[in-house]
Image 1: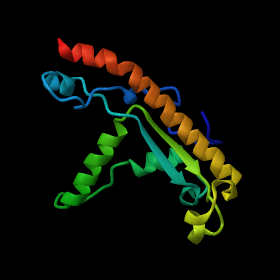
Image 2 (image 1 turned 90 degrees about the vertical axis):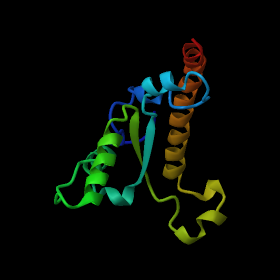
Image 3 (image 1 turned 180 degrees about the vertical axis):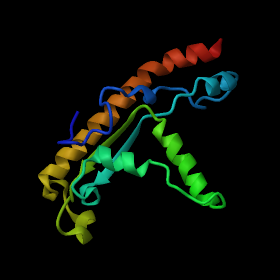
Length: 150
């Protein structure tokens, strides 16, 4: 895990949405794979400047709430449909990252050891989360392939 106070975007242990499925591999089992599709895990990286004193979890919850709109506003309706779909992702997590360095214009030229220590720690938490989700997905892949071959 990683992240500090208020930085979890839900249940850290519930990465149920990282499973296989989808349309990988194509071929005969495609129809069955579509029926078993599980939304993937999703990681939101939020620059702390946008939090305005709140937590990452509060920020994401607010960003994914539907907005009131006129029935004729098709764009707002589409955005609400996207928000609804994103809320269904069971393996969603949010992490807040601080500014990597005061000099934003030279970020590409800086070696990693010159970035803020708190930022480097946050990026390590990101790498660990992505690695753990990827490991679980790789472990499930053979079982999903066997089930689709039947």
